[in-house]
Figure 1 (cartoon, rainbow, N blue to C red):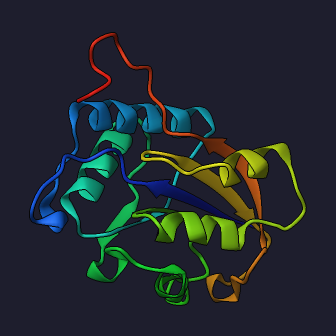
Figure 2: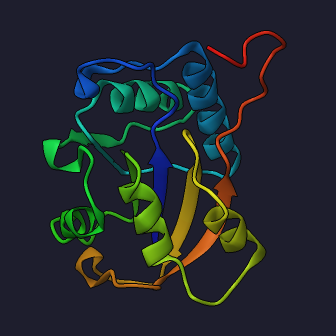
Figure 3: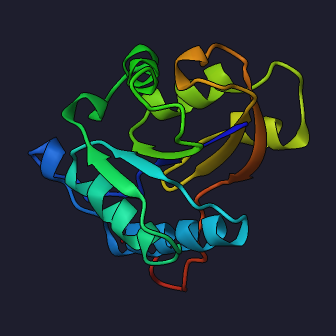
Length: 175
């Protein structure tokens, strides 16, 4: 059984250089909350795959502070604004001894990947995930596979989903 966690980067500020956009204060808080959620559900990734965008690295940094363990972390430019096929291709190179992987990337690819992987059998958790995958959202998936290269459409059970909404303090919703 493999474990895959998909995270959409947290809310980022506008900017001319999309790759260098950084998290807003709201985004930083949401990333911390995502880390707390992952700690509560027992997430202990062995491998973390990141896009090279600044907002992705910052999202991971805040999540990482809430988790135990020391996963191997790989930042790959091909995950920057990657589509389902590009992200799917990343899994083929993951060694079979790796049981748990966490991916932090961008929309629309991360949402489309989660939907593509999720079992077609409806569940409350998968239904919540399919209603929206906003910034900092987290989907935890279980895959009954021996090899990461065997990933295919609808092969995963959505175990947990957090919608990325950290509590907003009054007067801070617009930052």
